[in-house]
Amino acid sequence: MTFSAQPTASHFVNGAYREDAAGEAIPVVYPATGEVIATVHAATPAVIEEALAGAARAQKDWAALRGVERGRVLRRAADLIRERNRELSVLETHDTGKPLSETLVADATSAADALEYFGGLAATLAGEHIQLGQDFVYTRREPLGVCVGIGAWNYPTQIAAWKGAPALCCGNAMVFKPSETTPLGALKLAEILMEAGAPPGLYNVVQGMGAVGSALIADPRVAKVSITGSVPTGTRVYEAAAKGLKHVTLELGGKSPLIVFEDADLDSAVSGAILGNFYSAGQVCSNGTRVFVQKAVKEAFLARLTERLGGVVMGDPLDEATNFGPMVSERQRGIVEGFIAKGLEESARLVAGGQRPDRPGFWVEPTVFADVTDGMTLARDEIFGPVMSVLDFDTEGEVLARANATEFGLAAGVFTRDMSRGHRVAAGFEAGTCFINAYNLTPVEAPFGGMKRSGIGRENGRAAIEHYSQLKSVYVGMGPAWAPF
Figure 1 (cartoon, one colour):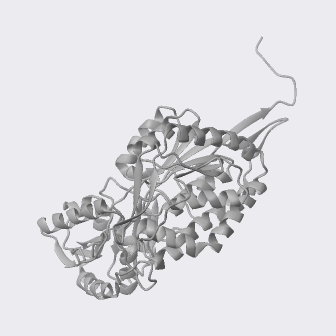
Figure 2 (cartoon, helix red, strand yellow; figure 1 turned 30 degrees about the vertical axis):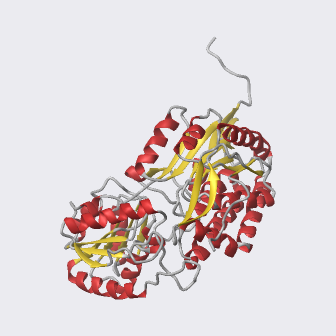
Figure 3 (cartoon, one colour; figure 1 turned 180 degrees about the vertical axis):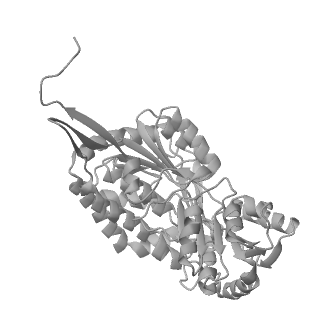
């Protein structure tokens, strides 16, 4: 029997579920089997208007609360998420195909972390006093107003919270549009925020494709847009938002380097490469898909990596023994298989994987190519799937130059026992999120974001406050005002 993940309704607007079957039907497909497990409808203009009008109303009263009161709601929501982690994780597994062994620890829990962190930060938001003789200036940190969040399909619940938590912390309201591929998790987040005490209209979820996102971005009531997505999509959003001079945060794609020096702990480096290429079936924007291995240890690295791939368990994602899941969609699998074919055509050496397992759903084996060169398609384009490219290098200077020779700059990593070199290389990376002897760990306490074409602005950490608030300066004259005539 097919599992049903049908939500109460397609949208969550003004504190309640809202349906409008006049919108285009969007099937929700379980990637592990290819079965349709729910159907939602794209937001009609009426639903979009209700969401934006409700957000504008709710934002005023929410911003008037003390920070500690706003924080209390966010922290309650975090507690509710943790209490319901298994239920939410099962839903996330059906929405994305990611194994339950992963969603239990990396999805709803990271959403809870964001709500808890920014809930704690809300009471600390403050301005400063600047003394100017008798006169003085004070600053006020104020919300932007109505924010629009546009999500991606790889971490749908996490992304909904990574955008919503700092927005609400600063006194804004949010209208969030999930990816049409994974529409379910954000609805539960909105429901939980209401249960935790958020006023109706503060956090709304509307479904739809690009047309819905464009309508939200163009609306004059919207002050801020935050998107997680591809570089082409981010570019279009940036252009549209610029017409209204709206604040923008872009968390986009990458082709990140991971450098393994000959003195690195080999098992640790292999673990980093696995995390940076095969976790979430490789569907992570910050993945270190260009693995540069110093020539002296390249074959040892490949041998240990191949051995470790024997630990891959592809099976029912709801079985916690499963540790590797399918692609999110048939379309994404086709894209990944196209890159694998291109790697073979360009004479990269296939070390492992490369096949489509004989099972229902959208699966691709973890795939490793060696002898990849900088000019190959595998080394230039973002794949967003379980395909690792291993490249050779000789010297530190050489590999750093090659690592930076890309239009992207989201993440980068280095494995070495020489910590001076580790810090030196991290300083030399042209990337916003860097790792030394670790990879793809993104705690909410630390800013996350990219350089170059990988994005603008930062998510998480105190840095996110700057992107969801604005400063007002107030000059106070303590004596008679002066004028030249």
